[in-house]
Length: 216
Image (cartoon, rainbow, N blue to C red):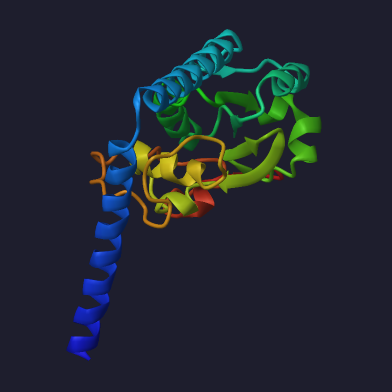
C-alpha cells in the first residue's frame, strides 16, 4: 500500500515537472514578435479591467450604502449585475454586526455592489424574495438571485465570526471574485467576543433563534 502511494506521488510530481518544463520551453521559444503580442494582450486586459473598475465606482461600488426604497433597488440592479444586499431591521442587533463586516468587504470587492435595505420599508421586495428571517443577505450574480445567507447559521452560528468567513460564504454565489479555496473555510481566529444584547423581540439570544422572523 505504501509503495502504491509513493508511486502515485512520484507520478504526480513527474507530471507537474513535465508541465512546468513545457511552459518554460514555450517561453524560451518565443521571439520578439510573440512577446510583443503577449504584452499588447496583457495591456488590453489591464485597460479593460481598469475601465470596468471606473464604471463600478461611478455606480456606487466600493462603498456600503443604504437604499431608500424598492425603486432605488431596481434602478441599481440595472447598473450592477452583482449585488450583495443586506435586509435588516432597526430592532435587530445582529444587523449591526452584518453592517460592520459588509462595510469592510465593500471596499475590498468593488466588482459587486454592497448595500442594505430596511425590510419593513420594502415589503414588496421582501415578499418577492421570500425574506423571512432578519438578517438575511441576498446574493445576486449576473442579475439573478443565486443564494441567501439567512441568519448566522452558515457563519458558525456565532456573533463573533470573522469578516473572512462572511467573504468566503458570499463567494460561493459567484457575486465576488475570491482568491481563496472555496472548498475550505478560511482558517482564522475569532475576533474578541462581542457583547450580546440582553434580549430581542423573541427574548433569547442563545442560538440562531435570535435572528428575527418577519412574521413576529
